[in-house]
Amino acid sequence: MEALLAFVIGLLTACGVYLALRGRTFPVVLGLTFISYAVNLFLFSMGRLSIGQPPVISVSANAYADPVPQALVLTAIVIGFAMTAFVIVLALKARADLGNDHVDGQN
Image (cartoon, rainbow, N blue to C red):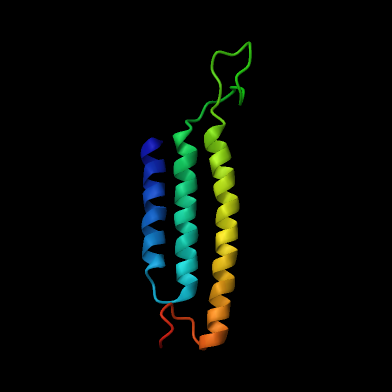
């Protein structure tokens, strides 16, 4: 299972980097989104899966689930959504001003 998760994270990262290096704005936005998904999966996998454990330390339980990776992923999702919205608005404004959707502004 760890190998599959590592493969998925690597595949999302590779697709994100490939798309982020394209010349048009829409693939760049998709590439940034894929990289954001890969980082979220990586952060979430760092917390280890613990089933049936309380999320915080309790008196009766010896083990507990670490809440820090879950909080980091939640924060990263909110920041990623804001970043994606900003980049889309920026791309639309550049398209309106320049007349094309190339990243460098040339045909």
